[in-house]
Length: 278
Image (tube, rainbow, N blue to C red; front, side, top):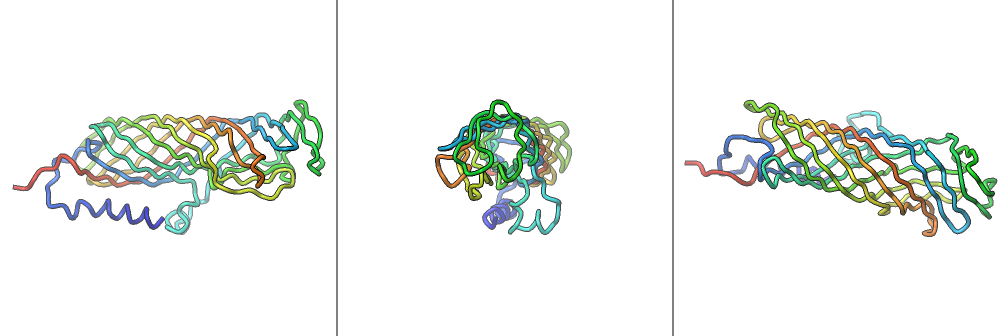
């Protein structure tokens, strides 16, 4: 997080050391860069999750999962040493044309399978040394933690690129209100916390799949260099290669839709379309 803090300091300091005079302020203009940081709340549709290994192949149907929101505490959310623990959003962007931006970012969500729910199960388990050996044909399975713990909690990391368009709604001295919308595509690199059939806990980053998303946002810019933005993002995640144990042969796959609500704070500055002082 030291690198993020340093980058933000450079962004804020840049206009102070300029020898040029900026043109009249127009947010969302070609040549503008920005960085933002904030937090999200997520929701997920039910998902079928298939688990495969050397001695099992089974599917859990319509599994319920939720996010895991951290309770707001200043020493957690605003402390550079701990600020990546909550669900967060980090993004760097550039306006390559008036109103049009391209950006890269990380959406750090958390996906937690609800424990102690009952789902329908299909498939088989054999020679696991547990009471769960057997053949299942759409039978009820109670998801006790002795059978399965399944979480993308560090986290459900959606590393993505987006293209957005911005349109001003209100533009007065020192303040601008604009709306933007866009599309995104990226990779899912979850750190999946799993215990399955008595195997030791597994918790490592792994490239598991891809995501697609749509986003809409309302942005309030003020005093040329700062903004606060609220966002709603809707998308699809497909992960066909999730690691579940220390054995590389043990995998899971799932896909689902997600909704994400974000509140972010940022800084922006402009490098182009500058004029010399007379």
